[in-house]
Length: 147
Image (cartoon, rainbow, N blue to C red; front, side):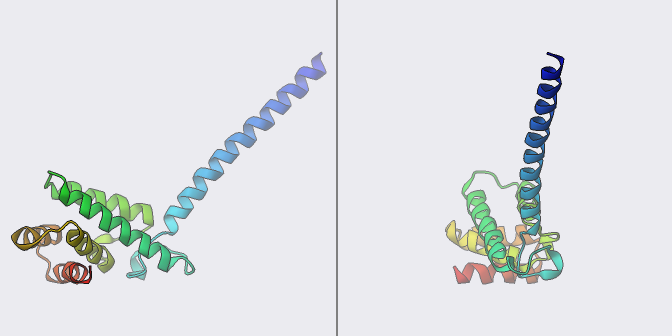
């Protein structure tokens, strides 16, 4: 009986170790996958795999567009929370400095267009989301016009 318990304990420990290692691997691979995502528009501000840079740049841009569209359609106008959301999206795609990444602002412009923001509302969003930075406002306009 002692031998049976010994093997059972060993078997249980091995199964537990494999299970935990499998979860860890799954989590690690997701983390690695997220860290490889980024914007192909600003190579210096991202960590990306050369073979995935185009696809992940598109995914990043799409996430920013969707987030912007959803944000402006909500009733809140808390620009700090909007920027926090941008930071979270950028982090999930491995974009280190979204504030300097033109792709981010082009995607914001596309999101504003998809949300049908026009006129004074559009100009207000554009100024508030960029801190009135002319270059960033031009990038938003570029995205808006391209949509």
